[in-house]
Each structure stands twice: as structure tokens, then as C-alpha cells.
Image (tube, rainbow, N blue to C red; front, side, top):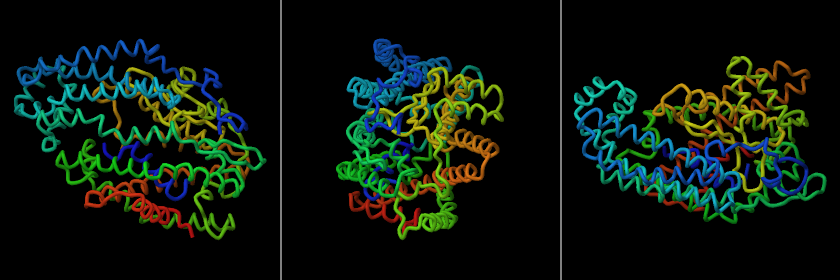
Length: 526
């Protein structure tokens, strides 16, 4: 898809570096290294491959089998057995590539400064492009098989029924499938079209340091994103401003590179959309999941129609904090009593296992197994990937990256990512490989469900008015972040893409101008 989560992250950081950027284990000012973390708090990537030697063996398997597709080119319509053989071969190799890819990038996210895994990531990206090039003939050739003949194949060979949906859905996208030569060129260009994403990831996770500030106790504190988030909720306004300004300064050092990277990502989207004959990038981005563009616009319209609620909340925040002007470093301070409670990772696990009990014994049992089976990489360390996510392959267990910092928000983040993990876990064990994925459009259902169920449990068991207020504040922030903010990011992406599609150019000045509009609309700063 075009408007990917990666683009969104890139967009957010460009925005925040241009205007205002909206801890881990101990109170030490130093960032922990991965070697400081006990193994029980690390994911087990070795469950995919024991080491890079095993990884290399599978890498060689792919390299040695790519030439096999040449024998099928021009023959997919010869017989149902030939078609089945080719599609089965494609699936079997793609499964291995998934393992190679996920292993390399999970290892890289443990510490993005490690050149060994930067190299592995680059190699598997290139291998994936080779695979895509090798199978690029399939879609154009499948579209040349007469419909009645294809239906006879499906009827005579039950094993092909596994691919019925994909084969029939291919017809829907027929006008956007190019010739086999053109498809091969696009597949081979994959390494080029991913450049913006790769450059941004290296700037964000490997090169950039957030800086050091003096905390409320007068101690130097080296910033990380986990520590930054905590400061934005708990520290004095002076320290919040210092942290905010310090982070901005670090990103502003890369301001032109970030703008150029973001511009390159948009140009890549425009190129692919035009090449495939779509009306625009939005249509292209939604086509794989057969979602009308009206749905996208309706979602944006729904948020804008209810933006007054967010503005009301912002005015209330301004009044409670007793400030003349709100800045982004004021937006995470709780409206009411501050939560001073620390939630250890073990306490969070217990809360989740109890709070999600309504989802059933099997769910909770499998959930618990994930905590003890190397699914989660818990704590923030230097060079580690930022934020939180769930990943994995069809043949592996789920993997969850956390940057856990003992806050209430971290508890809900863990519930969120475990929702994704359980969704994948059950899907991969009950669906065949061709149907194992989730569209980005529906991916958040399981995760937000977990958050809602956990919130209901915590509200029910709150013993004081202060606890309930703290939880309500958390709930409000979840709604603001999940509904309002994410859709505003989507609207911002749309505006940038429309600008380029209409002949506009991207620049620091352009991004700054539209960031100011974006921030003003969502936060009502004055």
C-alpha cells in the first residue's frame, strides 16, 4: 500500500521536527545497553533462525530456486497441475523470504547501529526484489487465461481452490496489471523505491541522538523516546519545555534531509500510481483491499465534523493548566491528579491476564504463553527501534517490540500490541498461507478491543475517585490519539500527495506552512 505505517511515522517526525515534537529502567541519566537487560526480557529471534549461519542456508535456498520459475513462464494455462505447481512454489519460497526478512530486521531493531544486521537487511531486501522479479510474469500471464478455462481448472483440481479468491480478485485489478516486462522492471526497482524509508530509519534510529537535559531533581538526563514521553506527562513545565526544545534542535539538524526524504517518498508513490494507471495515490493505496476512496474521505469528514469536541477539550486543558498559550509539551499532562504509580512489567502481565478474562480461558492461556515464550522485547536500550509494534511470520510465533517504562500508558500499549499478536497467532494457525495477512484498514480492531476490555476491568476495580479520574484521562488520550490524531495524519498525507500530484514541489518551507495549519486545526494552540 502507498500510505503505509512507515510513511506515517516519517510524516510525523518531519512534522514535529519543523514545529514542535509533541524512561527505561532506572533514574540513571545513561541509556541502558542491550547487554544490561536480562534475557527474560528479550524476544527470542533465535526461534526463527539459531544464528546467521542458519539464515544463510535459507538465503541460499532462495537463490538456488529462483531460476525454476523460468520453466513456468508461458505455460501457466497449459494445465491445472502446472498452474498449481507454480503457485505452490511461489508460496513455499515466499514463506522462507518472510523468515529471512523478519529475522534480519528484528535483529536490526535490537540495535540499529549494528552494521552486521544492516547488511543482512540490505541483502534480504535485494533478494526479495529478485524474487518479485522472478514471479512478475505470473499476474499478467494469469490474466491471459480465458475465464471459462480458469474456472474449469478450479473445478477439476480441488487443490487450486486455495487460490480461488486471489485468482478471481486479480480480474478486478486487471486494468492496472502491466505487461510481464513492465512488471519485471517495477519489481526490480523495489530497492530504489524503498530508499526514502531506509534513509529515514537510519537517521531516526541509528544516527540521531535526542540530547541531554537537566531534570526536576537537577540531574543530567540523556533523552530517549521513552523518557521523553514520561517527561511530557510528569515533569514541570520548565523541564517539559527543555526536553521539547532539545529534541527539536536535534531533528532540526536534519531538517533538509528529512524534508527531502519525505518528498522522495511522496514522489515514489506518485510514480507507482501513475505507472499503474490509477487516478491518484489515494486510489492506488486503497486498491489492494478494494476500498473505495469515498470511505477515506468519509472518515476525514467525520473527524472534521466532530472536531469541536477536541477543541473543547483543548480549551479545558488551557483553563486547568492556567496558561495563556498551549504548546505541544502541554498536551500530555493529565487533567487532574497525576499518576505516580509505577507498573512493573510483571504487574502489567498480571493485570492483562486478569483484565482480558472475558475473552475466554483459551485466549488468556495462549496470551500467558506469549509472555513466557520469547514473544516480547521489553525495555528501551540505546539504538533500539522506537515505539512499539507486533511482527512475525506465518511459521513463527509473534514478536512484540516494546520500550516499556513502567507507566500506565505502557500497560495499555502492551495490551494493544498483544491484541495484534493474538490476532496473527490465531489467524496463522487456522488459515492457509494465502489468507494469513491482515489489511491495514482492519488491523487495529483486535488491538483496540484489548485496550477497551482492559479499561473496563480497571475502571471496575478502581477503589478511589482519583484512580478513576486518572483512567478517564488515559481513555480520553486513547480516543484522541487513535481517532482524531491518526485521521489528521491521514489528512496531512493526502494534502501532501495532492500537492505533488498537482505539480507542486516539496520543500522545508512547504512542509512548515502546512504543519502550522495541521497543528492549529488539531490543537487550537491559542
